[in-house]
Length: 208
Image 1 (cartoon, rainbow, N blue to C red):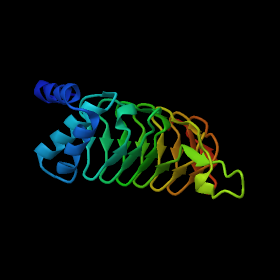
Image 2: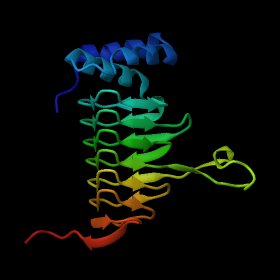
Image 3: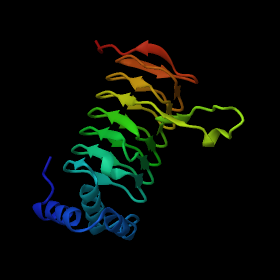
């Protein structure tokens, strides 16, 4: 992995030190849809200026949206596909480890979310980290209190296209979650889980 150019890092630091957050955010729409190398570079610069931490070699696709990016720690060599959306929280915890691949149109409720290293997150897959408690019943559900619960995806796990991981779930190291699965409870390391709700259908074994 080659480190990002020093001039790029310096510009990000300059933005961070010289402009308030809302002004830095105002630059992003100018470059969010562009396909040129310059657009890609500017997206990286703006993200680095905002994020709590950001590594080298990060690829940010077109039309990627975010909220509270200032709470994110993003590792090296991370790929974020077109039209993905990362929703943090002002007091949240969001960590994406080295080598993660986040597919196009993915949605991450990143209020309390941690990906280990080399996590694969399929196109359209969703991590849901919060839900309304639904009480009292006479109040519209969306106006009841929001409960945030952690989602953890350990090193080397792979979550398939359009899968959904519900609040409070841990996906174990090296686990495969099938396309379209709805994961309602923890999945152990090196398992293969599929279905609605997701169930472990087998354990991964060394090939002989």
